Length: 187
Image (tube, rainbow, N blue to C red; front, side, top):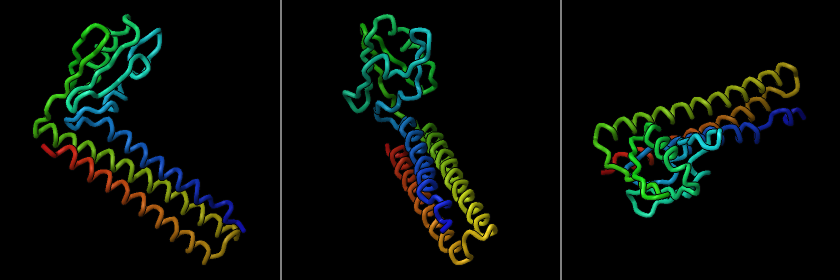
């Protein structure tokens, strides 16, 4: 049967990838609480190339409103401090020897609303990605039917399965967005 050409697992994997990308983007959104993931987008000019902060030091969150980075190489302290300051995260690291202390400031109402809007934008991109995967699957089903590799009944059955898969991933995105908005807006 030609359903082997219709790779439902592959489509599901691509949809899961969109959801995982969304979760990674959400991890980088500052919510007023310290999270090591907050520094994930920060890259430091180190040893002639760009490296993530977690590859030049140990990132930890000893307190709910503080991130620390223990830099391994003394020469990397200044570049790491500059990279964190210039990353657009609104963070201001303080140097203590080879330790960077990064206090997480309170979010004001306006900034919370901006972050919630940004979270919604990320979620919409993820929804679009999932729908694009569904569209690819539906086009493949049409082609398989047109080429007489599957019948109309099989096309409808697989189309329904694909729609259920899509709905499940969209629901997962909506749930993640709702949880992130709650986290951002709680004072």
